[in-house]
Figure 1 (cartoon, rainbow, N blue to C red):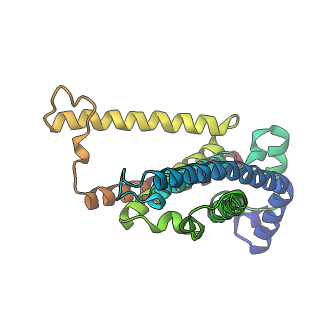
Figure 2: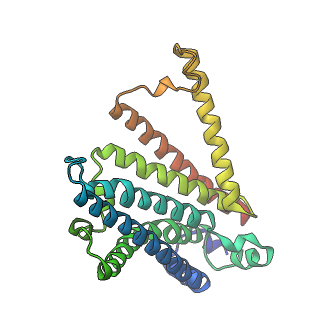
Length: 278
């Protein structure tokens, strides 16, 4: 057992195979369910796009500067991906280490011939890293399928047909905004990941609830500090003037904050797992 304190590529691969054999059906079922849900949403969105195009063609004088494709991207395509991506990662990370939820399975999991680091890396790579790539591919593939299916009954704008896998992030004007968003999503998913190693029952719900409480607490703390250091009117009770900074400075602040919290959550998840197996 002392050898299992050190990383072994062979044991890591065996642990990965064990996880895929144990949870493979659940992963496939989750992908199928996500595909069906996204397919329905995409059909509804394409129908809304077609109705809007028809309306614009009937009344072109209403808004000559209106771009229907930009509207569809900003109102439907990108926001739905963001919600889908965050929800998928948080749910996946919050339900990791499922074997630790029951006493009988946890004993078997603890006795696996693999080190804590290997078990940790398997769950992290499968539940967060691999899933992140898969969600991009799944969202793009589902939209293509929905577009082709909807096109059988009614033609749609050619512009949305040309969306590629990275179209959801290509239109972001400021790269720092993209970094902040990515790090915020990473922080949320790693918080759920750490919660899965700490809470035994209903880990994802407890993690989300805890995250909400911490967020409200930090917001109220910033409101209090803002009132201490800045003058506020009666209509600015919950305003936070501490964030009244140029966009670049504000983004740098959030990048540093989210990166630090993400690293802390990653270490916390590892040591929580190590304590559970002690």
